[in-house]
Length: 151
Length: 151
Length: 151
Length: 151
Image 1 (cartoon, rainbow over the protein chains, first blue to last red):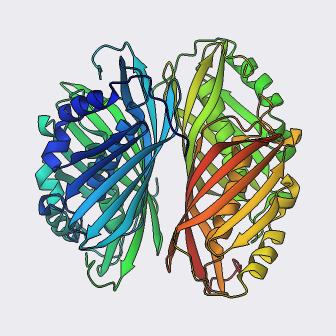
Image 2: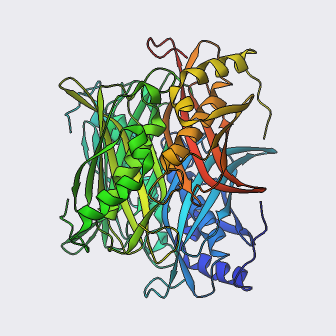
């Protein structure tokens, strides 16, 4: 992967501030673990309150964390005054989200002035064992100067 | 759309019981509104605890409800002893999930012995105005006789 | 579906001219059957030169026709000076593309200044029987004033 | 990536034979370049007969090659008597397919008894410069003992 040159040297502070405004993250127990130019990692403990019918974390909750990981990965490379919106994403569920703890890795595949494409991977961790359980591809849009959706 | 003939005449009871086991639904305030052969409708009020950074419902939360709507739409047509798993889904975010209340409509496009394809639509409601805000296409798998993933 | 108001009253002529420049269409035997505001229909006869290993039309060829149907559906609603690019698409293959003739229907779900979302359906026809065999969801981008990608 | 253990030691011969039956490959000038357990590489020269309206290779043609690359990557790990079907795929178009020659890399992310998930990447080559232009995620199904779709 190429290294990316962020346009905004203060991108980490911008991601931290925006992440705090995503109330869904705190409500689901999702935390921001790492922010690099073009890459973001989130984590979530198992929580029996957010499962599907078999007791595994609901696919949509996994998608929520991956969408934020991908969205913020893209946001690291956007200008300081930009807002980021997800246009679409797709996930493949490789295995049930069964584990004690989950990590979510989003990275930019192709940054662009208007459109940025990211990929995400979610891992389930149980003791010393880690397993890739969900993959995502996501398309983001950079918005500049639209009221009501400031970053 | 063709009418579907359910294999299990008790499909409604089966969906209701499985939905109750999805703890994510109660935690997010998502309710089961309607169950027909090949079609399911869910609803969710706006909840400031599950938003993204602009105060709209997080795309992943919308995906969570749509995934359940699609999954249960498919599940209505499966045999009584089957379990349902989502293999993959894609969502397109047509507009921010801004509204007082949201409804989620999942329907079967193509049922199959092993693979079922569904489509979902999420609407945002504000006063008398309703707006299509998210679309989903989802692929489900029918599982028979796999331990640990009973319906 | 709402009726769409095209920005360019000459949209049909614009689609016809652009379609002729898509050499892939003539090479695959795909024809433009119908153009309405927000909707396009294409057709293709069965051709043994474009199959997969079981003798059915290759999924990618079906995707090629659907991508053009969706892209031109979106293009009908764009300004006269715009170019259209597909950002991403997803297809679900509901059944093998087995038939004498195929039709491809693209329609706009959500037009936008920059981003347009379309859905496509491909049908296989054999005698009097028609069958939905592929669905597509596609995201398009409107480009204005980019050299080298004029419409 | 983990190394995969093929179930059929003769997998290369099986892929070569099936590829020859995909008439679409020869018609589009797509060749089989490399076959490993869980990985397949295809190539295609630029061909003015398969472009979109701006003279670049049509997105659907790129998808056709990537679908075959992913499908055969999955097929390498299937039993000798199996047939492979694509259930769905999604592509992201990162840049126009502009180049003298294109290569298509498919690899298995998660093999399974029934469902296999693959990822694909298409590169455009122009002189000494190579560029990632399309990514794919695809879901395959292993079919055993279905008449009419032998491998």
